[in-house]
Length: 198
Image 1 (cartoon, rainbow, N blue to C red):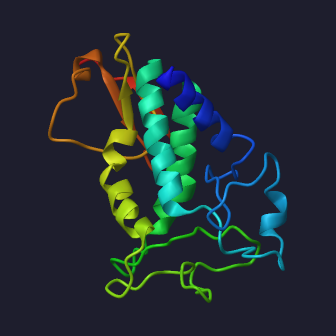
Image 2 (image 1 turned 90 degrees about the vertical axis):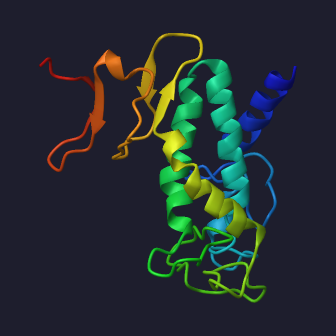
């Protein structure tokens, strides 16, 4: 029953209550099903800035990863993880200013991540002056990036690339002998192609 309830909860927040990025909250709340469009229109409360609370997206990704493993590789969970990672997580840490994180990912037309709001949860944090919940989970989200690239089914003897991202490791995965390589060359994208015989 716990697995079924978890899958149901995931379905509720990742479909009819989600933005295309995978995020599902506006102004720290879940809206009624299919009622998010008005939140990106100028003039609505928090419109344009207070979308996709970082820690909610991160914890939804943790749930999706557990459901992916429990299901043996259900595609809907892998697709969600890739969409949320590329559109929600990677943009929440300011590369030019280490320690600066986003509480909310703004989605409104013509808005900037740099614009702080009155209650200071929107816009970039200061590296040493703020400590929101989303800063802690934001650090954790980046630390967990490697586990989102490859997936090995616990039920079958197969593996999948779940996120197209360049990666390398000093450790050999258990399935390395299967002849799988993945990479993103400059001129083309290749994924899960058989390695050349030597």
